[in-house]
Length: 327
Figure (tube, rainbow, N blue to C red):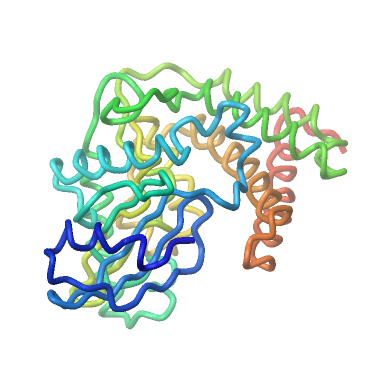
């Protein structure tokens, strides 16, 4: 937690010595960093405060295993700052970083432009047809802009920290570890673990090398924010942005976008082998994440349990449908 007194010097450094912090409210969510809404006076404006203090430590075991190397309290802010600059330089819409600093506690903090809006997944179900059509056009443009950025090797855009590239082999390695961890707490996974591992190996071996990698977010469309004023879209929570296989984003877009919305981002060059591989990996990873949120006392336990149980079930279904399935 952070209180207003800890931010006084940062507020003045960012907005002038006459500026005062009138209120500071913590927002719900945030599995790795804390987010607050700050109301300022002189000048009068609202900003978001990002505090990299992973007090809950939901994924501490994955960090110790070496799969959260860019998401620590020390590394993530550096990656966030560099990635925001990279995206902005490539005309991808991201909230502006207004100030960065370090609290007396040693934790890093940033003031970020507040985009008054809501995530796509909250906006779409309640929007009018005209609002949704306008936002759908922006969805296609923004995702298209992100996915138009390429290079010949995978990894983070700006190497300000050491980070393993998100290659299929690395994803498979992480997924095996997540599966092992799940098997220790879930009987269904434990009974079927060998079958799942065989299917995972079949899928990764089917992937052929490619000469080009695409900039992906990794958590679309949940972290696409629709601004109320003009239906413009912004990417948020960009610490996981990497050059990798574009199918990583399309797995989630197919899962969480309505068919008519997915049409705005659809493409005909997706690799079926990669889609199958990343689909299974995503469900196993989501099951693992759900299990950690349940065990760690995440505030929305109903949601955490839904994530866990649904993705355990879906992971097993995908493997039972594969060529190694047994009745």
